[in-house]
Image (cartoon, rainbow, N blue to C red; front, side):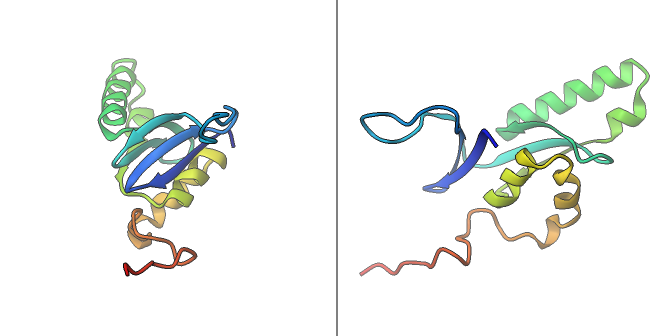
Length: 128
């Protein structure tokens, strides 16, 4: 549970929770900031391969599929799935923390809420 995504001001921030917070600001340094996030995983096992900005993850998946197909591993290449968009932060973090979780999330993808909408636990605040 060292890596963790947080949604701040409409952007996804990836933090390494092992990094100590700054003595001045109290904030950790982020590893990644992106408007949408992508995950690449194995369809059958649910094992997470890569996560991060959609452009980088799509490129990684394309290159990995090409290499696997060239090596004759067609089934493995075809099992690499990339999901990108505004995913819910709690689902995204579970993909990082729980082995195989991506597979179940993928099955529920159509019913997941938009990732940038506030969760029911965080009430919307009205402007005065």
